[in-house]
Length: 198
Length: 92
Image (cartoon, rainbow over all chains, first blue to last red; front, side, top):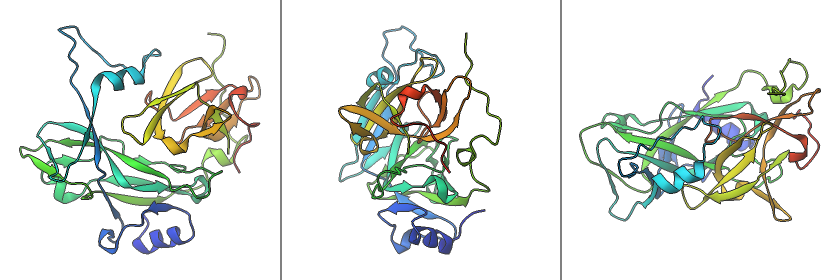
C-alpha cells in the first residue's frame, strides 16, 4: 500500500523513517516526495584497452570492483553553470536528501523519475528502484541521518539537457510492507544453510 | 545490531563513499559501497552494520542481510560466526 502525504508525515513524526533534510512544501505531492540532485556525478568511461577486449563480469568469483572503479569511472562536479547531459550518456548521481528506513518500521520505498524529465528522455534508475527496509539504518547510532539514494541516470532523448545541483530529479514513494521480514522470524521458516564440501 | 568485519576499505565512486570488502562463507569477496560514516571503526578494524537473518545449526554459518545490494549483486550472504563483532541473534 502506498503511503499518502499525510501518512509519510506521520511516519516522519514517529521516526519510522527519516528524510534529511526534510523536503520543503513544494516537494510534496499526494503520494510522493521529490528529491534533489547532489553536485557530484560519476561517469563510466569506455575502456581504452588498445584493441584488447575489456569485459566486466560482476558474477565472476574473482570480480574486483575496486579495479573496475579505478579503470573506468570518472568523477564530475556540477558547476555553477550546470552540467550538460548529452544524449546516449549514462552516469551515476545521488540525491541531496538522505533516507533512513529502520528494519522494524515495515516500510520500503521506490525511487521513480519525474514525468517532466522523462518526457525529455531522462531516466533516473535502471530497473532497480526498490529501497529495502533497513536502508540507511544504524541501530547503534540513533542520530544517524541515513544514506543518499544513488541514481542511474541516462539520456535516451535527442536533446542536450542541463542538470543543475539541487534540481528536483526524482521522487520517492513509500510503501507499507505486509508482515515482518524473515529477520524477525528466525527459526520459523526453513532456511537452507550454505553449501559445504564443494 | 550485528556488524560484519571488513577485510578492507577503499575509495568509493564519490568522495563521501567507501567501498567495503567482505568475505563470505565460501571465501568470495563482496564489494559494497556505503557512505563513509556508515562504517564503524573498532580498534582500527572496520565493521559493516548488517541484519541477522538466520544461523545455520549445522555449520553455525550466519546469513546476514547487507544494508544495500553489493556490487556482486548479493543482498544476503553467509558469513562465518567469527566474522561478526557479537554473537549472532536474529532481530526480533
